[in-house]
Length: 352
Image (tube, rainbow, N blue to C red; front, side):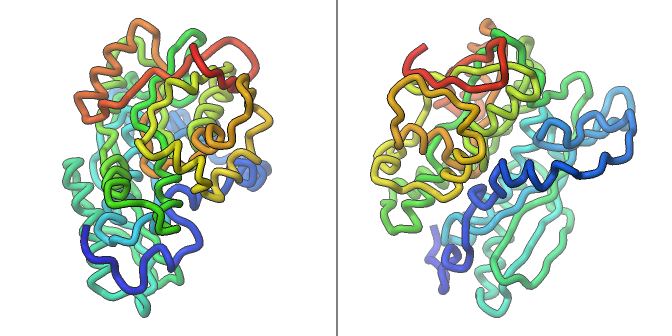
């Protein structure tokens, strides 16, 4: 961690990380009357199921996967901000089972406010994340902006038969979550000055861990669907899976992997505004069996910046999924629930 810049990055933005995302209910309303795009059989995945990336077949054995993701600072360290933003953007490719090829940088900076060295450090952090993924940043675009924004437009490659969508889960599949929850809570605590050095290190470690297991997971027999958990929280992205597949889901709250301080921070009220907007958008589609616990709801709706993969797989494939995630550094990966026949809703229970 380098010395914080002056002014602090998080003081220059009204939100941070994936908590900047437009709330799912508002976004659905904005897109409701959007005209249908040009129909082409080569477009294997478009916007119809709120998937993680667009996929375009270029021949029988190859498809291009394209995504973009950018946001405002979640941390004050510029190098860490760049690494987190780039890691998060690449996650959409991995969630489709794609191997990244290259990226373009998206840069919007208040050049009269931020020191040049801070902007260079943000760019260097993004380069470092892409280097860890084995790809170049081949160019990009920059503007002078009121708030600092950084991210990537990223391109990857996948065999169409290996492609994993968020909508292809099956009844009876178990749900595996690849990373611990709580990044948004940690970010809220950081902004309040309530996060200690160990907590900051844990937040940066998880948010800069690439979801590079995605391509290998896509090839495992029994893996049916994948997505990554980001700004809409675990419940929001699971509901997208449910709606796409026409299924219900059950989450076992006692099985959720959590960052060490996450539950205490939730109890202490270190909750983002995005968490509240998330619940307002989709809470009507969630049934909570146990007494409603504000801390539990905060954990389930917490916007995850560069969160983990959420994998729907046959029960007999779960051990292989967990082993592959562990091989890629996600040792906290856990089975957290299952997909069930029924109307697209999520039920939260204390135990399996």
